[in-house]
Image (cartoon, rainbow, N blue to C red):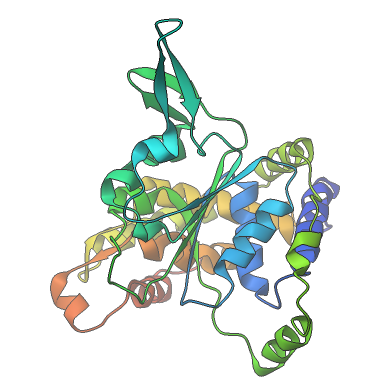
Length: 320
């Protein structure tokens, strides 16, 4: 098939963002590709890995690459919902309440160590992440567009953390892991940090809001064959029937696979989705949404292993 010219704005955007982030982050090609997929689908991103891998660096670099307003939340157990959403302040002079916006009123919100916030504070993000609005004292306030939550989470440290509830996890389109660098990449990191200069301050926006809107519209035009759409549905349905799964993937997960496949195809220069696109996205789109049975968790079976089993069991559609 001939590459479609309609994919070029998406490819150009992806290349510029990837190159910009590459100035401060070594390697992590697949994770960067997935982050751009979430961006093009107007979806939220959960970056989960051990400390020191570069989670916050990646999130800050992605935010800096966009011509959007940016705020950062450092999540702690004493963070309250009003610290996130804002508060109505009474004025004695005018005898009226004035709403003071919280940091959530931004286009890119970095929530660092999200699992250190209490469940009450975590739930303050639910309406914002799904409906792009917040309701305070019965009044609904719209959030700016685009609205993207980049959250980081440390899966190892348990003391002082609160596991994200299923409703919160389901609102993250993708969960990505960076992994340890190779020996060559780690050597490059050391070379880059020989001095005290912080090259992250050199990052400037490389994508405007208008360009992002155009790219998102082009992604929606990417073709998905009926057989591939059925394949997405079969994968999601299989997680619900799996004997090791207590709670399977939601319809929102199916949408993540479907729309993510369109974005990935466009990034890779195609105007049609392949089964390999869906398979590449299956783990980051589905694994964090699955709740395994208690007996299985005791045997140290992971959701990633279940997704791998589902992919192996479901036949891949063949092009006509």
